[in-house]
Length: 189
Image (cartoon, rainbow, N blue to C red; front, side, top):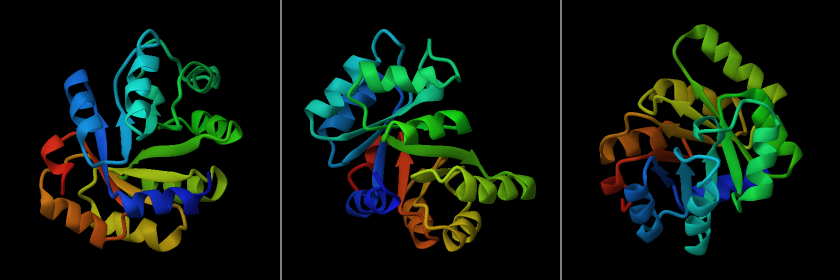
């Protein structure tokens, strides 16, 4: 999938359901959100979590770092690809993002914009790793979102600490293509 494809998906459905438990999974599959970030699970149940998402015609992106039993080696992405119907992964680990790209999965990088060194790292990753999208955390850093959006063709997703409609609008106005949130009351906006 290309950056333009994922950008179109985010433009059509700019609010991403980020789920951290079965209760949010059930709400997400009933929501209008087209994309679901899976932030929980184990190697024993991730296939069932993804199946429920896919059965409801949604895009499933698994946060590989947060699945219990998976490590930070490339084989973790191979496992997700071979044993689930996930459309892609998100990770803070460069090698996992790179492996997802090699396997033609959606490859998102979650990164934390905490200081100028982090900004330099983000710029470097955009140019070398070429993720399909970046999830910038926390999502309330609109100035950083604006800076990153202006230097990259990589779609930017804002995530973390999004608490209301104004946070969503601010992030989108700053240049984010989408936001991810575990606050299910915001999924219908």
